Amino acid sequence: MEQNKMQKNDPVSKPRALNIMGQRLDIDPSKLMDVLKKTVFKNVSDEEIAALVVVSNEYNLNPFLKELYAFPAKGGGIVPVVSVDGWNKMLIRQDTFDGIEFETIDNEDGTVYSITATIFVKNRSHPVKITEYYSECYRETDNWKHMPRRMLRNRALCQGARVAFGFAGMKDPDEAIDVMATTVTTDMPATPLKAIRMESAKQNIETVETKISPQKKLEACIVESGFSFDDFQDWAVHSGQVDTADSISNFDEIPSEVCNRLLRATNGLLTGIGKLKEATEK
Image (cartoon, rainbow, N blue to C red; front, side, top):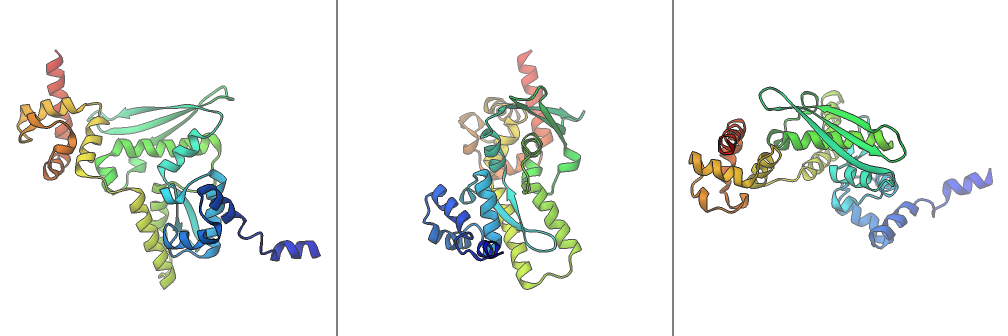
């Protein structure tokens, strides 16, 4: 009885997780709580930060690199959210991880239908296969609009890693958006504190999906469709859609307004590149 009372009130037990994280990230443990509050875990209680720190330590994630962040759970409290970089980091650290392969299935019109992640585990006779479908995963975000294949591949990676190695107690960014939407539409009117936490979580989600330049969006769209910069440049010169196309050496040299215009007509862009490449190779 006396022993249980000492464990419950032991002031040393509470900061142990912070000590572990401080040593792991080379930050003074006595200052770590204040640093977390002012940077990555804003508007989160000490108890909630402690829970996040435990998860971070368990999976060796770095919240300062946005590998893990927090969002408010329905009914109160917070739930740890792990970014795609965090899921990938956890996956490749597994001793029995033996590689991952992705298989993409397209619709007849060339849009993505599904992506299957196959994860190979050394001590198992059969690999883990997880298929994610575009129709079920699509979200109204810029990344999903401009990089649907990458986003669907990320979702397949996260879910495959979870099933293959039993990662529990956290969600991926898309799941966080889903829960946030459910929380906002079904809960009673938010208290001021809850409203602050919701806004903080939304900002965290936007931070994880880092704002990408139009040039990088265009590059990702083209490369993930199986084309190279040279393929794009040949099309740009041939079609006249990009001024001075014959003088640019990479995607970064394309003006932002031109990139945005091309991204608004992605289907036509990719179809045109594909037809020109096919004709050239004949």
